[in-house]
Length: 90
Image 1 (tube, rainbow, N blue to C red):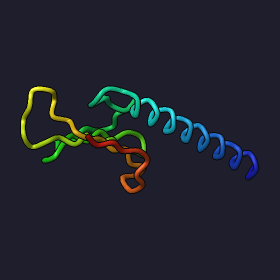
Image 2 (image 1 turned 180 degrees about the vertical axis):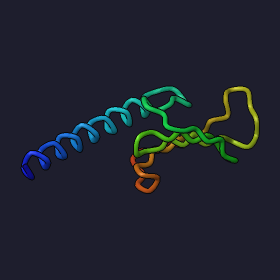
Image 3 (image 1 turned 45 degrees about the vertical axis):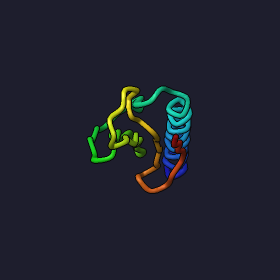
Image 4 (image 1 turned 45 degrees about the horizontal axis):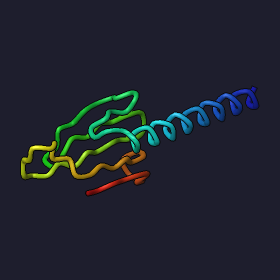
Protein backbone atom coordinates (compact mmCIF):
# COMPACT_ATOMS: atom_id res chain seq x y z
CA UNK A 1 0.00 0.00 0.00
CA UNK A 2 2.83 2.41 0.82
CA UNK A 3 4.46 1.66 -2.52
CA UNK A 4 1.28 2.57 -4.42
CA UNK A 5 0.93 5.83 -2.51
CA UNK A 6 4.55 6.67 -3.24
CA UNK A 7 4.09 5.94 -6.95
CA UNK A 8 0.92 8.08 -7.12
CA UNK A 9 2.66 10.92 -5.27
CA UNK A 10 5.63 10.70 -7.64
CA UNK A 11 3.38 10.79 -10.70
CA UNK A 12 1.47 13.83 -9.37
CA UNK A 13 4.77 15.59 -8.65
CA UNK A 14 6.09 14.86 -12.16
CA UNK A 15 2.87 16.12 -13.78
CA UNK A 16 3.06 19.32 -11.70
CA UNK A 17 6.71 19.90 -12.68
CA UNK A 18 5.83 19.41 -16.36
CA UNK A 19 2.86 21.79 -16.02
CA UNK A 20 4.94 24.55 -14.39
CA UNK A 21 7.77 24.09 -16.91
CA UNK A 22 5.41 24.26 -19.89
CA UNK A 23 3.63 27.35 -18.53
CA UNK A 24 6.92 29.13 -17.76
CA UNK A 25 8.12 28.50 -21.31
CA UNK A 26 4.76 29.71 -22.67
CA UNK A 27 4.86 32.86 -20.53
CA UNK A 28 8.48 33.52 -21.48
CA UNK A 29 7.59 33.57 -25.18
CA UNK A 30 4.20 35.30 -24.86
CA UNK A 31 3.19 38.94 -25.12
CA UNK A 32 3.23 41.17 -22.06
CA UNK A 33 0.60 40.66 -19.37
CA UNK A 34 -0.22 37.10 -20.38
CA UNK A 35 -1.84 35.28 -17.48
CA UNK A 36 -0.87 31.79 -16.30
CA UNK A 37 -2.97 28.91 -17.63
CA UNK A 38 -4.67 28.57 -14.24
CA UNK A 39 -4.84 31.97 -12.53
CA UNK A 40 -5.69 31.72 -8.84
CA UNK A 41 -5.64 35.46 -8.08
CA UNK A 42 -4.68 38.83 -9.51
CA UNK A 43 -3.21 41.67 -7.48
CA UNK A 44 -2.65 45.24 -8.63
CA UNK A 45 0.48 46.54 -6.96
CA UNK A 46 2.19 49.91 -6.86
CA UNK A 47 4.78 48.97 -9.46
CA UNK A 48 2.83 46.46 -11.55
CA UNK A 49 0.40 43.59 -11.66
CA UNK A 50 0.89 40.13 -10.15
CA UNK A 51 -0.85 36.96 -11.30
CA UNK A 52 -0.72 33.94 -8.98
CA UNK A 53 -0.87 30.49 -10.53
CA UNK A 54 -0.68 27.06 -8.89
CA UNK A 55 2.51 27.38 -6.83
CA UNK A 56 4.09 30.14 -8.91
CA UNK A 57 3.50 33.79 -9.68
CA UNK A 58 4.08 36.16 -12.59
CA UNK A 59 4.85 39.81 -11.86
CA UNK A 60 4.74 42.37 -14.67
CA UNK A 61 6.61 45.53 -13.67
CA UNK A 62 5.16 48.84 -14.76
CA UNK A 63 6.97 52.12 -15.24
CA UNK A 64 5.60 54.92 -13.09
CA UNK A 65 5.65 57.28 -16.08
CA UNK A 66 2.73 56.66 -18.41
CA UNK A 67 3.66 56.28 -22.05
CA UNK A 68 1.81 55.29 -25.18
CA UNK A 69 3.13 51.75 -25.68
CA UNK A 70 1.82 49.99 -22.56
CA UNK A 71 4.51 50.99 -20.01
CA UNK A 72 5.52 47.38 -19.13
CA UNK A 73 9.28 47.18 -18.79
CA UNK A 74 9.87 43.80 -17.17
CA UNK A 75 8.48 40.54 -15.85
CA UNK A 76 9.49 37.78 -13.50
CA UNK A 77 8.25 34.29 -12.75
CA UNK A 78 8.79 33.00 -9.21
CA UNK A 79 8.19 29.53 -7.85
CA UNK A 80 6.41 29.68 -4.46
CA UNK A 81 7.13 33.47 -4.45
CA UNK A 82 10.73 32.68 -3.46
CA UNK A 83 12.74 31.09 -6.29
CA UNK A 84 13.30 33.19 -9.41
CA UNK A 85 12.69 30.95 -12.42
CA UNK A 86 12.79 33.48 -15.25
CA UNK A 87 12.91 37.28 -15.69
CA UNK A 88 13.37 39.97 -18.31
CA UNK A 89 13.73 43.73 -18.22
CA UNK A 90 14.02 46.41 -20.89
